[in-house]
Image (tube, rainbow, N blue to C red):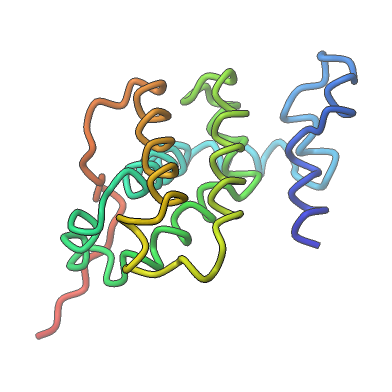
Length: 168
């Protein structure tokens, strides 16, 4: 189900042969989104954009940097995947491109990054592997390269959309 839903939003090589005059909005409307609903998503495009950038920033961090995020993220290791997974919810991801927050030319690079993260074996989703395993080193390098391509100068996690809970 996940892949079928995912494939409806992200074109495959076969789908790329279709006429280019079909817009992203039309594609989303074809699966049940009205223009009104899309406009509602558009209102939150900065939030969706921040999720993608924050995800890349987190993946560029080493263990010590991630550990420093514990007061903000509670469980940085879990947040690594959850932030990225949320950022790539198809309608949210497409909203970023539809609103030109990220140039369309970076879409395939971002999707490839997501795929590379999805392909990380469960066995190495552990603090002990983050700085030492070759897969994680490559992911960190890839995240850094994507941030550079997107002209993101800071490597500081943006907390503008973070809710802080304090104990009394």
